[in-house]
Structure formats: structure tokens, C-alpha cells
Amino acid sequence: MNTPSPDFQNKKTNLFLVLAGIFITSALLAELVGVKIFSAEKAIGINPAQIKLFGDFVLDFNLTAGVILWPVVFLTTDIINEYFGKAGVKKISFLTAGLISFAFIIIYMITILPPADFWLSVNGTDAEGKAFDINYAFKAIFRQGLGIIIGSLIAFLIGQLLDVYVFQKLRRITGSKMIWLRATGSTLISQLIDSFVVLFIAFYLLAPENTQWPFAQVLAVGTINYIYKFCVAVLLTPLIYLGHHLIDRYLGKENAERLTDEAAASSKSII
Image 1 (cartoon, helix red, strand yellow):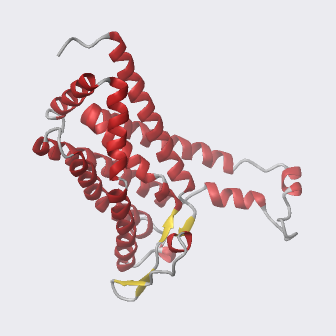
Image 2: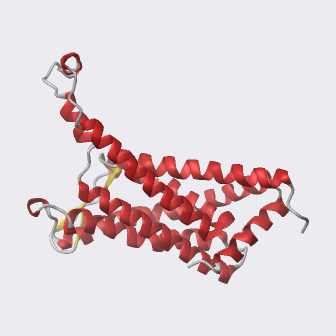
Image 3: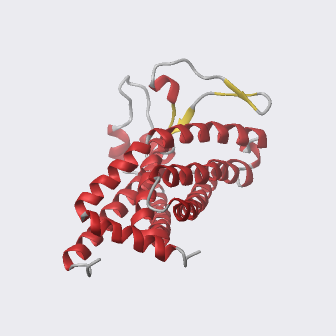
């Protein structure tokens, strides 16, 4: 191959910036909107699943709204892994964890600011004329429990590091072929761990005694979450190929192959 041109170096930098922007934005938004729990069954117009797991826990697909955005994080992780290797994924993962922590610190500081009287007054009733405390609502939406934040960040980092490790292991076996196997396989394995770690830390290990979940409930809810993530990971596999196609067109086939080969070679020496 020829020596990379300055134009290729610029495109490589721009590509990483775009992927990093999508990754960071999606992860941060997933954390912020994750306080809302929605019914997946109602969203698609079917009856609740009523799945009985681990004893007496009857569960439906009631999921955090963050799961809508996490698939974007998974996809972006695999693309960064393919073109920038372990070093690229680790760099963006630790940066994102730091930015999420910074965001929660700022949000907490804002929630403890004393509200203006006129703000409370003009928002003192809802659309039906009922009394409404907007400052309480603001805190309830934006301030999450410390256990949830810690659990989410630890699960995020473990999931990312495991994903990049499995991805590169599979790439050594498949070479440049079978993108679907290393992308989907790494996501399915990493999310198996992620789905249970966040719940175990947030609702079992660090939860106040009066709100602590039974361990069986952690297993049950984690299983429901993983079933959803498993299905989404499989359904989104075609988007992996679309992303590769668009990047190959942007960089040029030869330059794209150069970048993936460099990523694979550099990843061999990184734990």
C-alpha cells in the first residue's frame, strides 16, 4: 500500500470525531433519560408478557428509556473497534465515563439551587389545574440515586472493556470476514455481564435496606433486560454493514482496509 496522504489523515481524524460524538452523546442521553420506565409491550400494542422467573417474580418488558439509545452505543463501539482498535475504544470509553460523572455533578449542583418564587408560581398547576411542584419534579427527574449512578458507570466500563476484548479475539479468528459474528457476538457477551452488574450494584449491593431488591429479583429483571438487548443486537446487525459501507466509501476501500489492519495489529499488544 502507498503512504497515507494528508487527506486520508484528515478523514481518519474526522471519522473518529464523528464516531466519538455519536458515542458520547448517545451514552450521556441514555443516562439522563434512563429514569423513565416504559412498557415495551404497550409501545407495540400487545399484552404484557407476564413472564414468571426465579420464584414468584412475574415480569413484563418494563424497561428503562435508556435502552432506546444503548444500541447506538453498541453499534458505535463495534465500528470504533473495527477501525481504531482497542486503544480507540478504551480512550472513548474512559472519556465518556468521565463526562457522564461530570454531568451528574453539575446536575446535582443545579438541583440544590433555591428555586425562584415566580418560577414556582407560574408552574404551580398542571394542565388539569391540579397543584404541581415543578421544583420537586425537576429533582425527581434529574437526580438519580448514588447507587444507580455508580452501578451504571461500573457496568458501562466493564461492558465496554469486555466488548473490545471479545471483538478483537473474534477478529483474530475471522480475519476481515464475518463482521456480523464479531460485532454481534461481542455485544451479546458484554451485555450479558452489563445487564446484571448495574442491577446488582444499584439495587442490591448499594441500595438502602428498605429498598433493597431480593437477589432473585435482580436475576429476574436482569434476564428480562438481557432478552431485550439480545433481540435488539440481532435485529441491528444489518446496520453494522451499512456503517462499514458508508465509512469505506468515505475513506476509500484501500484506506479503509489499511485502517482496519492497523487497528487489528495494534490491538494485539494491548490488554
